[in-house]
Image (cartoon, rainbow, N blue to C red; front, side, top):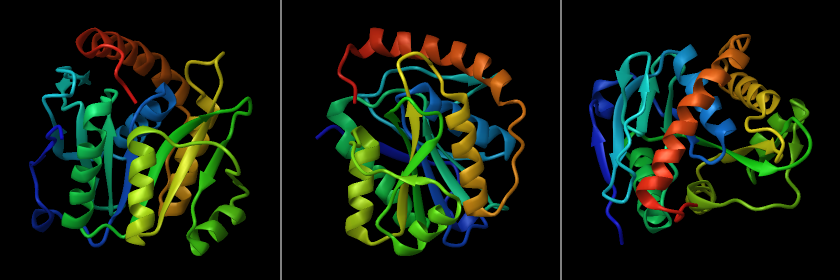
Length: 236
């Protein structure tokens, strides 16, 4: 099994988090990355660690003149939440090890709820959800968000969700609708961001989302091109 290392800049005892929520963003597509990066920037999430592996493409994203780990762990004490966001596609050979590392983060920080942001091919512009937790299902019904009836989960997102179902930790997947015509589904990303905000009890302004899309899309296209050049076509 390919090794994935978990590195902390700050451990649980150094951060004021109490049974936080975890929100996970792993590509593809671009909409998932946009959602995670926008949330992290607008709510001032702090980098507290990262995942590394020899299997990961050696790419270091730069945002606002700051070089960042491509698969990073970030926290916000006020929201009481952790996010894990990847700006590289995870090779098939390291998906299992990556999920094991995320599970370790969940245990270390005593995470109480897990949200996985992913995508599904669909012609609509909104989002779907998937969860077996009754309380979460009621929340989504009150927000008038459709439940996914048929489809599939892949890569890190799919395997992590199955692990969470086995662990009995309340968990759900938000699926942004994607279609072949749009590189990024802005409306879907906005809907996902606002849904996360409502479920976690904080406010977030999405008026700059369209502008951020242009900046992030250019950056992520460069990253993905380099990613494929480094590792070939062995992605989730």
